[in-house]
Image 1 (cartoon, rainbow, N blue to C red):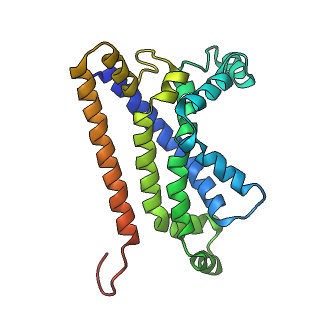
Image 2: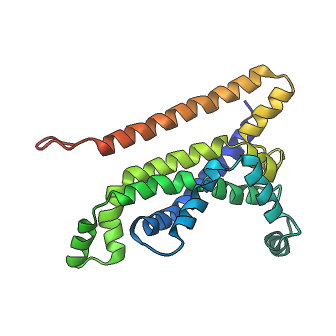
Length: 227
């Protein structure tokens, strides 16, 4: 097991999940309850990483992070380091390619919250912020949990975009998926197999948790029975 690569993967997945969920909750609520021009375009942009080949997405992100781009120059001027082939660039890229895995479960969860409950909360004197914390979020928590688990798992196992944007720098951008590729290229089947089995097991647990949460959310409530 490449523990250094495993540590980088965990740091990347954890940072991506925390940052992305904060943005995804806001975006999902907007898409669930507001109608505005260009909504379909925004929904398409959010879902784009699901259908776009990782190498294509990675290429455009690499161009956006290069020294020739405005973003790349601004970052290098501010920090003195390049955005491409760095952990910071890898984190920004992971926020993009994991976006649909955070937004879509939350979108479905907020869409399932009855509008009458929000209106009743407002009529009871609760502010919009209080309604969010006391009514919306408790009802949407299965979607929040699914979004967190899927975002973490997807970031942990991503390969194409990571290789394009981050490269293969030990201790900084070499993730577990990249390490598996390296070990395979070196014909080290034992190490590659161990790391692959670890990711496979984590992915299986992740999918099982998501299905269990979704099944519990959809289960009909029986009167007189404790949930």
